[in-house]
Structures are given as structure tokens and as C-alpha cells.
Length: 115
Image (cartoon, one colour):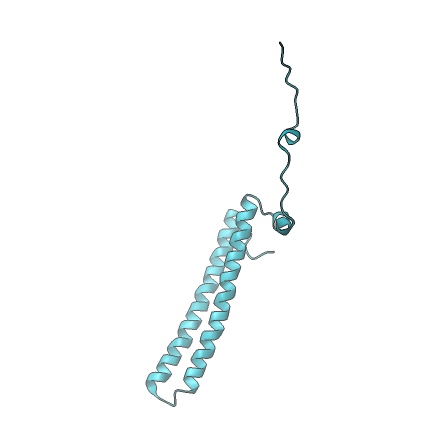
């Protein structure tokens, strides 16, 4: 008895897997391999920066409110000034981190903050 192996298309033997329609936009943007890692990092870093911006505005407003309601007390004014100063230092650190991320992205080939 002789067996003859015919070259078959693996898809005809195993079938194909299709991505769900919900994630097709992600895959079309480069959701596989390094493109997927870049997309996840991009979305994560963007989300962190959005929260940092909201937190910065909240801290500035809280410090300003604290300063306005201090009634001239030196300790309350100092606390409000410290809160505003810390908020400004924090947003400066985020700006420096943004610059570093852009430089690292240039060297590694990841494109951050693009859609």
C-alpha cells in the first residue's frame, strides 16, 4: 500500500481565524507585534498625561482657593503657596518626561502620542 502526500493549503485543513469586528480598528492601526506594543504604550502614556493635566488643574485651583480663604494667616498662605509650587514642579517634571519619551521614541522607532 502506497501513500501519496499531496501539498495542501494549511487553511483548508485547519481553517482560518478571523478577528472580531470590535477589535478590527485596533488591528488595522498596527495592533500586532511591535505595532501593538507601541499602540498600548501610546494609549497608556496618553492616559497618564490626561490624568496628570486634570490633577494639575485641580491642584492649582485648590491652592488658589486655599490662598483666598486663608484670611492672611501665614501658615495657610504658606501651605497654599506650597501646593501651587508643587503642582507647577509636577507639571514641569511631566514636560521633561514627555521630552525624554519623544527622544526614546526616536531612537527605538516607537511612535508615541500619534493616533
